[in-house]
Image (cartoon, rainbow, N blue to C red; front, side):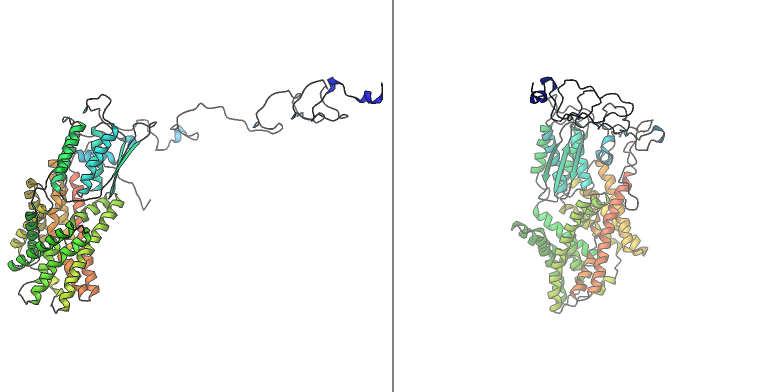
Length: 569
């Protein structure tokens, strides 16, 4: 046998490509075996202290390399709920956020409480703490009404309320009441200035159903507003069984309902409002007639602009010009009348007191986006009134009209005439707001009481006009809220018209007059006073409403939950 044959490897001595080269000494016996390409080369010392020979085994690619000391792994835990306490939780040092050993007290609401207060209380508490709605059967099918149809009905009701000037919190409360009346739990309504949305999630494992609706047109009709409140009240009543189809039918009738007063009555009411306001600031019979004629003419011009499709900004601008023009004309004619009273009376019919009260109320209840939008609307309307009056005053000053801004300092005390004028102003305001005829008398008396309180504090007590206005407005809000809860209706018809005698018409006029005569500093001071009076009215009405709720039973959740804030955080 040759040397080449001696060097030829035998079949049983075949090795891997990664096997140790010939000549190296391995620690294990060299037996014939088939190894992996990733096998440890022969000759390398892989034995650690206390370990025996390496055994062939299949391991994961993520296994810990040999020779490294791994920390001991904790025992495997069974898979639990996502709401289990964390690992660092200790029973002896349990935070207050966890459920106490005694459990969370259930929130129960009295069924005889008004639905407005019950829904408002539930909206202000967390979702997990709201009591579940009771099962109701207002439908023929055992599976219940279709969720999209209930949400659509809810949005249509919320649209009528928001378009009628109702506050955002009351709109959300009504929407929440409609959903719960049909057994839909886990509903979250949202109301902004132009958008309504509602979301319903049947359970934690099901997808939510969300619907929205845009409010594009607004109109003042408190009769329609009261009808919507009556519908919501009937739906919230457990003894009244109204099906979904019946609710849709009643809602359609509310939409088709005509206004309670014809156009000529509304025009006459605007004249009565301006004439009564002129008497409040010291006018006589001639001033009453002049202010009424100016307001009626401005109202007709505004209607013509509305028919032409002009925005409300221009409607307010046009409506403010005739009263100011008539006052300037009387001054140029050297008539023995107070032109300031004529112009002030015309401004009373245009000041957006309704939007102002609603905007401040939304801000005080936490709806800041809606409040900012409403106050911006008030600013635009006020700017339109300023432009209309300034145009008339500017031309009057250029023509030589002797308008006296110092007349604002003259206070005329005529208690009987002023009380009668305040009653007439509130009556006219209620008619312009399209209120129900059954509520006109109550709101008229409420407005008269408000002026009596203001006159007693401002004229007899020599108290600041801002403080007197706030106190009188608070009384209006208190009585209005109590009357609304007594009749299970909205509080707007009982408060908006009653604050008419308190509106800052004279301060607005004299501020504009000073600006027209190049006395900007004095004008800004007077306009600042008008803004302060307007804010006092809005805050007083809201405060009176909140105080009235203290006398109402709203169940065990008497302490209404609000956002907890301390020093800004």
